Amino acid sequence: MLTADAYIVALGSYSPLLTRPLGIGLNVYPAKGYSATVPVADAGVAYSVSLTDDEYKLVFSRLGDRLRIAGTAELNGYGTELNEVRCRALLRRTEALFPGVGDTARAQFWTRLRPATPSNVCGREPEIDFEFLPRKALSRRSGPPRPGPRASPT
Image (tube, rainbow, N blue to C red; front, side, top):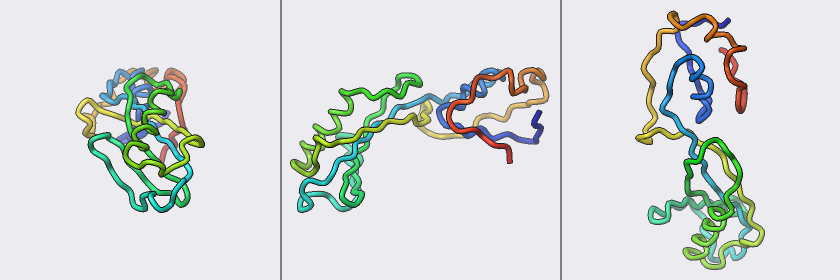
């Protein structure tokens, strides 16, 4: 058993899965974000600095001879499957803003879960007195399997 004056839970959107068995509810939810990476098709029209388009909620970055388009978020649980409709929407919107900029036929898509809160503002949860939690609740065996990278005590 690990004892300390304070504990930090830094598992992003997976944090509630660790704390829920301890009776600690966290207002953190998984938001699935999408991005596409495409080879530059026409360097003459390709952007060279990072851009944010507030209307389309997209971010554009140049990565050498590739372009990265990131945007959209979906609240749909912990699944990390790609949604083809959202992936194609990234490319359609990019083509509408920057026609011919990238080789969209060779696009590579990516998605990951990001932590989100109801207000979209990160904050510190109220301090919890672990002394009053049942001893079994603090046992490593009683919790759910650890998703993602393992946290190591420091």
